[in-house]
Amino acid sequence: MSPRAAWRLESLGFGDVYDYVAGKLDWMAAGLPTEGTNAQHPRAGDVARKDVPTAQLDERLGDVRPGPSTFRPHVSIKEMAQKMTQHQLESSPITTLDGRLVGLLLQKDAVQKAGEKE
Image (tube, rainbow, N blue to C red; front, side, top):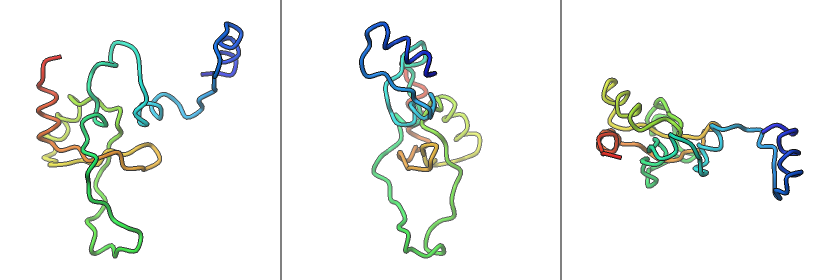
């Protein structure tokens, strides 16, 4: 929100008001709550598995699989299911804008969740 909007909220009596510079997608990537018509729809970060193996800085590149394409947590699960099926991706890393691993989304999980009734 703009500094002007933050000032207006403070003038209306709201306490802890901040100018969140990083933006809406960063907010969503952090798993923070959202509102609106799409808030109830599952997203990639919601379905991604958190128990994934990771590489350490001292591991050799040859011992670690080359970096795959990553996706952001805010992408809808239906879109992820379509992309993963179309490109035959068994799994996709879900990362924040700054590259922090959120989890690993499996194609079978994305397809299952996308097919569920809401």
